[in-house]
Image 1 (tube, rainbow, N blue to C red):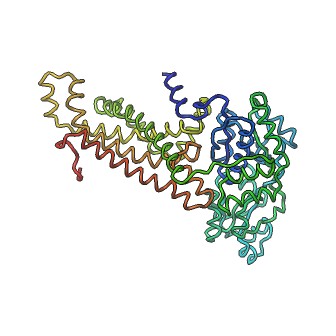
Image 2: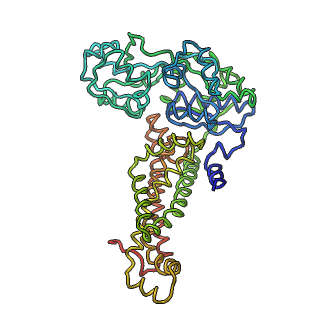
Image 3: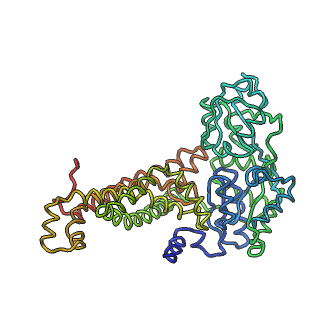
Length: 502
């Protein structure tokens, strides 16, 4: 059993499937992090280090866990985040203390890259001028203002909870949401205050006023690269390249790179290649895929997630449905488990499994956790329909089969399963269509598929990118539905097919 699990993990996780020397650069789900990750990848490839594509993996905790377990090799981080989020409550007064603490985890840090991307609060210039709000303290004079923050800022130790306490802010309406959506909310006046970054191009794009941190709540957030210390021995040239980034980016130059992506519609890979060309005089170009190439690649990834999880669910779900139909107590336990899993929200299940897998030393990012989550979600429709199909077989037919001398297995194989096949196929079809939609969550943890362009489009506020994932996903769901309807005509005799009213 164990060797089958290892084989499954090997096939479903790129960091296992690639050569042990292959490196993976992680990035948080915002432009600056992805651009810095692309720069690291280009610099590494220039000295011959083999890389997987950059993986966008959501928030700080996901990346930190992935770096510690070796699922990624390096990612860009900020000194303020290291102090206030990763090692909150510990005294880390200077850079040397941070390095010493990181070393205990087997992690090393480059020198600061040169810019300070501190947190701040922002609101529309016109509204701030009208209400005469210049500092964060001024917000206390307007308790009816609506606040909308990125989800990570809502929970960070240096985020909303401590900021609210430091300034004694009275906020009657505070919402957490995907950070990219907060700008739309401010622009449409659905919210009035949000969190911003010092090098955030959306400050100019949406004409926001950055409120002065008059009580000096936010620490410095100097950008650095975190990497696994073992790379200093296995990939010394890459680490040397990474260290050469120290001091190369000022606040203004990082803002310019972010603007080239978010305002001028260049990809992070193109902007990173241009930066490396101009800064290091290296002849590098970014690979630019056409729309059809991108859709083809995401379709292959998406089909892989759906087909592997669905195949596993069929292999387990149909026998489980038979057990439910033939035995009372085991059947109730199996059905109860599948029903409980189904009540857990998809995103929550993915996060929960990530936490469990880290403790079990299993991959917590990439395809593996997504496939397991889809597999669990797929069980209930298949089990229920198999159970319903077997229970609806007329007693007279079962008695006739028994009278012919068929044993229980022969009755099941020759009579009961063929009669239950229409309902079983309906359950599989329902599961497959649901899986196509749920698999888009894979974009949150680097599993690829249609979720990747949807998440990137959300981050860049690009409707065309979001549609690049959403339209193929809808089309694939329809194709899957038609495929199973056609399969039913081939597999199930005409007299046993379900009518449209069944």
